[in-house]
Amino acid sequence: MASESVARAVAEEAGRWGSMKQTGVSLRYMMEFGSRPTERNLLLSAQFLRKELPIRIARRALELESLPFGLSNKPAILKVRDWYLESFRDIRYFPDVRSRNDELAFTQMIKMIKVRHNNVVPTMALGVQQLKKEQCRARRIPSGFEEIHEFLDRFYMSRIGIRMLIGQHVALHDPDPEPGVIGLINTKLSPIQVAQVASEDARSICLREYGSAPDINIYGDPTFTFPYVSSHLHLMLFELVKNSLRAVQERYMNSDKDVPPVRIIVADGAEDVTIKVSDEGGGIPRSGLPRIFTYLYSTAKNPPDIDGPSEGVTMAGYGYGLPISRLYARYFGGDMQIISMEGYGTDAYLHLSRLGDSEEPLP
Image (cartoon, rainbow, N blue to C red):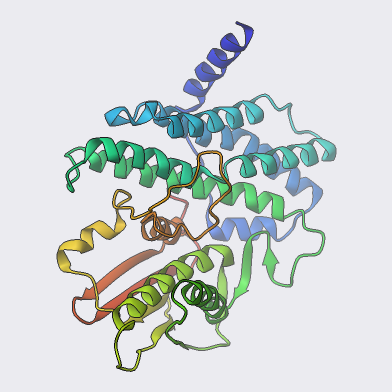
């Protein structure tokens, strides 16, 4: 009985906090603030997060309770909602952060929250899949599903922001950071280098799956650097390269012709760093292009067990890779476009704002 009243009190509190205004931060601000990780700055950062994180988390918890088509009642979605409410409670009832010891304890606690939420994406995917099975025995999406797509865009964008804020605060405690690295931000990130690593990772998956993999050629200035979060760039490039390799591999698998390479071109403009991933994998029909950024066309054969291990970053087969990668690009003011020539191949353009001035989008 007591636990029920506690749960009710937490839910009521989340209702209040969910209507408060969120505060966005820019990449540049995170960089400037984090360049001096003094005890005082870490204390200020923890105090900001103690107020900001409950607002963001409460918003998502509330939204999870009012989804259309009965999605809110699916076991997987209820599980995610419980994670959000638990995290809201942990931060909300954490005492004021006033000393170094308070700050260290707070940092440990938000670190645990980040781990608790590791499996949110596959678990949400499972809930959507359960709904989709019920809703569309036919191959078309019933009207109103756009609402779910918009919700997922907001939900995942917010998740990127929450994880960035927690990850940045935790990383500022690293006693021995690499030169030029401030928390999660590499102030001298080489896009060519990240493209090389992401390409090797994607090729090794392709080799494992098909026994061979197309070559990847990378063009651009190897000395060029700009400030960005390397884990975000790796995730986006890995996804694009993996898709290109798969398309080329499947097109040329039973062919005697030479397999064309996947090309990655890095261009540094005054406003944007643009990375193009170009393949000759046959392209996507024009009618299919609007679908590639939706969350409802997953091809996963075996969704993860709800209590199973994390699927890592690949998300192979969920059809979530592209829409989530585009959110990562947009998070710091960039974007992603896919241009296709059916019968020839696909060009994916990743635009990254090199100014770092844009505020986080706050859904």
